[in-house]
Image (cartoon, rainbow, N blue to C red; front, side, top):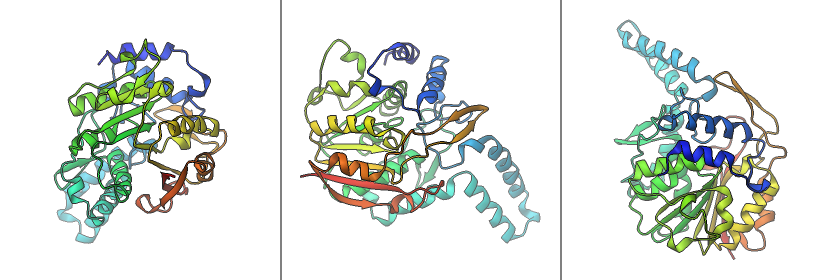
Length: 356
């Protein structure tokens, strides 16, 4: 892998088409994450004390993280001295701690996987500790995070309509730190290919993560820097490209994924991506986004850095139908894996489209 600091400098200065520039939601987040990579913090990108934000989901409340940690520390100390605490009070303290640290939500996600009888599917998965994660959960001796549990539930949903992931080519836009690639590799899926396209510097983070966690070279922008095309069938198993390299992709894919990132974009941006994706002729398109779209205005304070998280105009589920209706039919729709309401009272749902 090319030095992350050098990559950050290169991509920060790279001029691309406006359609591939960070949207309103991401503009300041991109600058913050570029800065942290250039300072050498990429090895701690999953540690909440460092301050990377926007692409590694957590079950605990991020914006109140430091306050929660102090409170949880007091709770743990109180539980340790629990000889003087009655049984009922001790249980209340445990439940309160579990709710604050995200454990309760993680357990509910893991239970969904188990109730759907996917033990063989999950048998080999064990998430790595690359990135020094603040939040990780241990179930049946294996490690999971909010990211891996979210994706495992989504892939399980897809697996009900697809017998095997063997010899399949997965393309994802906005793949976070590369969880899908790790899952495919960890579960020993045969002859798969995974391509993640993301805003710089997030493509740098996912390349770093997959190379470290999977122990293999990852295809990237610099291998095709002087070429006007990227032939999909000639790519290695794992690949992380900047989002604007989507126009170079030539060939065919089997499955396109987008989890929680189209909702952070405006309609013209999503339409452009999906038009190019359709030309790659995936059999399935799996989307997980908010049915009502993202908030149009929200002020959030992260570690004394104030950012505005908003979209100019929300993209809604009906918009995906409009873009895909000529070539794709809705195969299945479900909100159950993620609950009927998100924490901010929006509906997070899975949409699976199949090519006509």
